[in-house]
Amino acid sequence: MASGVKPRVKVPKTAKAGDTITIKTLISHKMESGQRKDSDGNLIPRSIINRFTADFNGQNVIDVTLEPAISTNPYFQFDANVPETGEFKFTWYDDDGSVYETAKKISVS
Amino acid sequence: MKLTRRDLLVMGSVGMGATLMGVMPAIASLTDDEIAKIAGDAEIVAGELFVTAPEIAENGNTVPIQVTAPGAVMVAIFADGNPVPNVATVKFGPLNRSRSASTRIRLAKTQNVVAIAQMEDGSFQKAKSNVKVTIGGCGG
Image 1 (tube, each protein chain N blue to C red):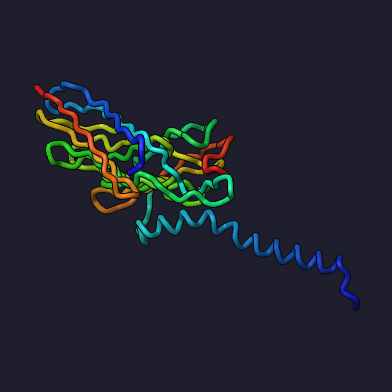
Image 2: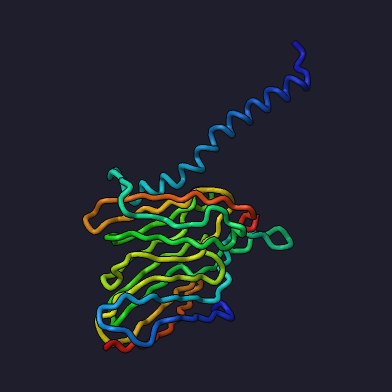
């Protein structure tokens, strides 16, 4: 498990049915690209978040495959249309097999 | 005829030059290969897809980009001058009508950020944005 990995998500708390809301997600992760060399000249092996998904009430909103070219502390911003009250689930998959999750509720009037 | 060191040097540099010429186009076409893997022989048009990226990126380690692809199911993003051109592949679900995503990427040097979008009807669109990078972002 990569240490110090912390997800942060910004989702509006309320919205009107059918609104388009903007969701901002950030996860603190080194995203070691596998291109850097350490002080002995050895290549530091790749260790990155390779997938990020967001679901709302079980329906997929966005599914991103990340490569080493994504910056450290991967930031993703995207929109979603919310038809009803529910919960967003965000999942990040690490190269080393760890899975990081966070969820946010939104109430829709 | 005696083979002088000067002759050897000239032969060597011509050989190097020839090899370099062969290798250079290969780097740009790594991206084309990846695009061909996704789109196959399909004709790729410009369409409504667009990539928003700064003209000049001060720090190649974190370059903000945005991809907007109205009507797309999937968008694949490449950086054609990076050691590995793949950057990200974004699949949109039904609840994402605006079909746009923003993120920050690493760019090794001045290059194009290329996006290929697969539309709902199976066709493909392509867009690119040139970004000048002052400090490379791949640790090199």
